[in-house]
Image (cartoon, rainbow over all chains, first blue to last red; front, side, top):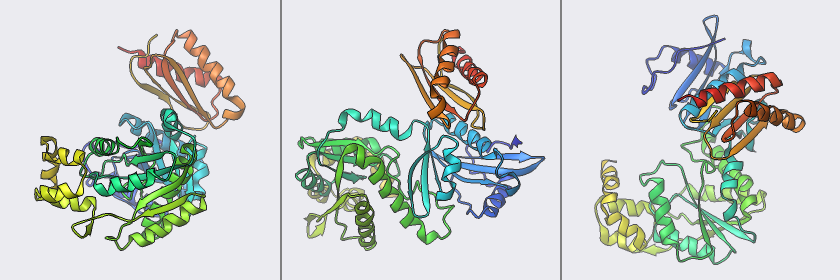
Length: 341
Length: 87
């Protein structure tokens, strides 16, 4: 077998000849072609495409092998090329989401099974979770600990209230800030504002989630039979990852979330969270939102006020650190970005 | 020989291994293998012998092995290190 041509750098690959072939192969394997990837690798046998796979950041997806070449070591060759592609792009650890029945094929390639739930399994290759936990070993303390997971886009008085309420009920509260940068406020800013706002709470430890919070943006849907199962599968995997990968090492007995009265789909989400965490023996506490001006405080409201430069409203919604940042020059590009949306 | 940059060698195919080496002040060897339970000590011994032969005393060596034989381990490790030692 020989590798096919490289995907032209910087292009989305729409006019790239092998793309049509790859799409046909992916679909013939019962998968769905899902645009949005950084690299697509292909393998040819006598000028016929026999295997392909894509990489979107640190996530491998749409791995497809022609029936004639299944059972041979084609997967090993395909994964080699994808790992090389990922390492060249600076990703030491790579994720793959797959139906649970395919997990052993990846385990035979030294992938580590992180979680299996329902229709999806998540595996990783590389230093991954053990390295993340080893790096945070000094921050692990025994006791009955709790966790809050926030994006903090940006950090509000609502977040602060949630953290304070949670911290009062546990030995140590781990405040996980979502690492993934899919928000208008970059991770470094979200993390710093959360740290400054919670500095007065002695039993709060800030951590970043690294790759171990799976957002809808990271989770690929190509292997799911029904697209409407997507959000449920993504949330289940994310919750299971929290419960199985993060909760035991950090001694997390309770997860605290803010009530979301503004969002109708959240009732279903909270129910699912209670169920999945409950199956793992982790409690869920929903903390009511605090209000300002008769409405619950939310980061969405802060962003709306920031877009129009309404600092009087912002001052009622955020702690001093966030207000100071929003008033600073460093926040101008973010404001411009919000205006363009 | 000194590991100056990040380099890799090998594949994830059956009976082969993938080696990634990068600069580090200490010597750290991480081994992942489908036959780790039975053969980790032999894999480590082979890596150690190759490093000694090439006079490598520091670096982060990551191995992902799929049941490679000792000469394959030696060859892949040496190739990765020679690549990493280039100016």
